[in-house]
Image 1 (cartoon, rainbow, N blue to C red):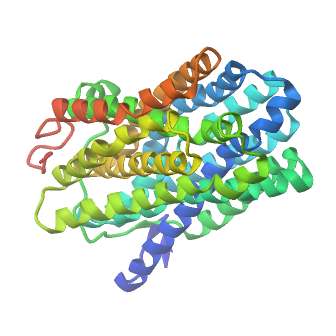
Image 2: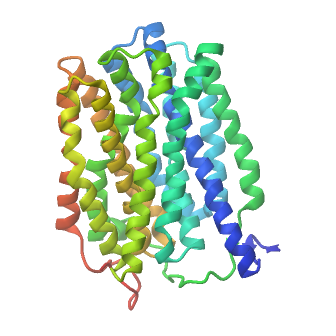
Image 3: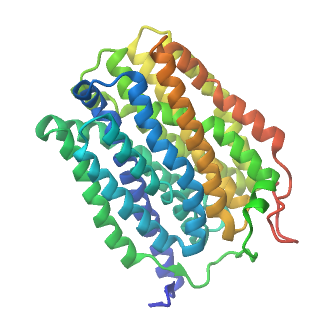
Amino acid sequence: MKAAGVDTRSPAEAGTLRWFITAWITVSTLLNYMDRQTLSVVAPLIRNEFKLTNEDYAHIVSAFLASYTVMYTVGGRFVDWIGERVGMAASIVWWSIATMLHSLATGALSLGIYRFILGIGEPANYPAALRATTSWFAKTERGLPIAIYSSGSSVGAIFAPPLIAWITLRYGWRLAFLAPGALGLVWVVVWLHIYHRPEAPAFERAVAAPLRWTDLLKDRNVQAIFFARLLADPVWYFYMFWTPEYLTRARGFSLAEIGLYGWIPFVAAGLGGVFGGAASDWLIRAGVAPATARRRVLYGAAAIAPLGIATGWIRSTSLAMLLISVAAFVCFVWFINTSALISDVFPEQVVGSVQGLVGTAGSGGGMLFSLLTGFLLDRSSYAIVFAIAGSMHVLASLILWGMKRDRSSLRPAGAEGVA
């Protein structure tokens, strides 16, 4: 039974509902990544049709990341203000329509405009998902549901290459944008029907007055995660947007072969997300403080990230795919545990805003790195790009280690701080 937008089910019913909510949010992240990755799958065809250079393609990718960067912060604040139920629905309606508009592209300019519009709607999905998880799950349980719904992005990336390639080869690339956009509108109808906040969660709720932007930006822990993700996230954006291009231009893959093999790194990404969330939850249950557990997993993943540097130098395509998969695994360990770290450290009332700021850092870094990638590829090779990408998680770990503090200034007096 629901009243005034609040769920009043029995504990058993609520326990079932929260996992269904997690599953449905997983579908939203699946669609989110499928919609944004469609371009990278069909890029070889579109680039040939519109005669786009590497820098042209980089500018189109950056058009998406430019609006995504700004709207991650705005979207996080919007979700904290209006709530995750309406915030999520509004976001998905917007990006679904924007995805369908791509089918009308006639050249680089129109394609860049539609990518920019897409980037306005997509980022609010993640602050809304984190708020929903914070509402329905205790700290000791959040790593796994965050890993599950975040894995939807890798599942979307797994399905996207073969599905989009099949649609494109059979019906053309324009329908490849129409189909996933339409599915998003169906998702919203179900979400508005099922989602309501719990009336009395089985864990503590933080009590805090609304905070100003200056309060958020002054907090040392916000700064630590912000700058760490500024360096770490661009690695994933590189692999997401440029892997099909790399396989085509450097390894000689056809569109059919991209559909056949291009999903492999995203399986590794999904496994990294689930492993990262489950591992830090296990450490917490073993007695390690939540924030400390998340950071230990982050540091461990960063230690293997430099293996990706070898990708641009080796001759074996199979080994290159393995190294790309390792990098994808590391990226999702970082996504999951930094998001869980936000929910561990900060009051519920601001997790959307903090997640938005952190997402802005990551996508802003991704935009700059994509522009750098296009510049370097038109003048050099992928080897230098893989060398830079393989170093960035190590640098991010050093920043996180050096800047973190044992207590957040955003937490009410007497509440648990960062361990």
